[in-house]
Length: 91
Image 1: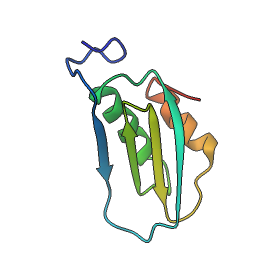
Image 2: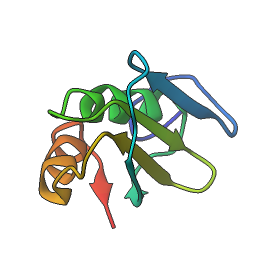
Image 3: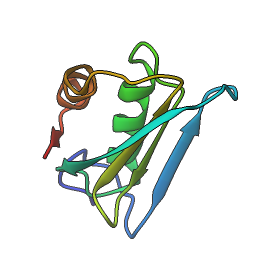
């Protein structure tokens, strides 16, 4: 059982939740803290894809990374706030 979100997901998982295709010209990778399973990854991607301007977010649980894709730069503070609101951290 995951101790971060109490789901029963185990093992290495990558979650990719995409919105409709758009002209993506910006992407950035961030380090996450507290993301230990697919349930955690889903919580983060749900939160980040709701940030204005974000087209797609991908979480790699094994690497503890978040990759954000958008047509133009999205403020780090907005992404960090969404990650924090979901209950996780950004390094």
